[in-house]
Image (tube, one colour):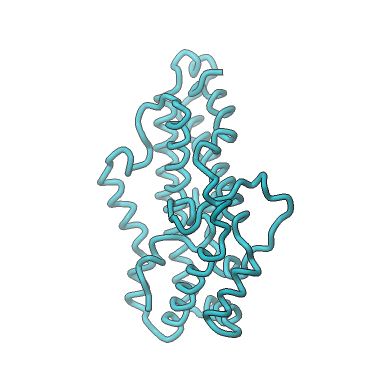
Length: 259
């Protein structure tokens, strides 16, 4: 059975950073060697931060962040460095991608690939990973995954944006306003985002069938096993304040933070 919970979040590890208590993120500094990632996540990969920012609605969020930072920068400093609005919009994109990459690495460090795949196989049956891969190439399912990537691109950008703004708040950086529509109370933009991300659900409703139903059953099991096999103790050590190592110097260079 399909549930809207799947459509509400990405199956990549970054989903943990949306505040899903079952997952979380780990401190990448504790990871001495790269861990093998679950085959599940290779099949159900979400778009990278650089790919996500290309989505029209994600780009719009980035531009809003750039506008907020432009207005928050110290005017004389900004003028002395010839920083225009385009400079801050470029900065916003760069920081969203950097924060996203950081968060994805942290989330991945909390995953145990072999353990997750073994747990998935135990619950879904022998050959379930191969079946999931085969179903992901079914034309109807494949189109669904394309639409899911579009949805994930926007939602992930919102996650990165939310955590960036939380990091600045925790560090007491004075910012004039919020780019995140949830924080700013911009209900019109939030409604636009919801409409833009409804395509996968609409598609599923119009394309029910054996392949789609089985794929979604497997996805629900995959989602559960990825959560259950995460290193929760490590994951809960992370907080948005750790993004300041990425944000501090660029924001100082753009007159938003004092040197």
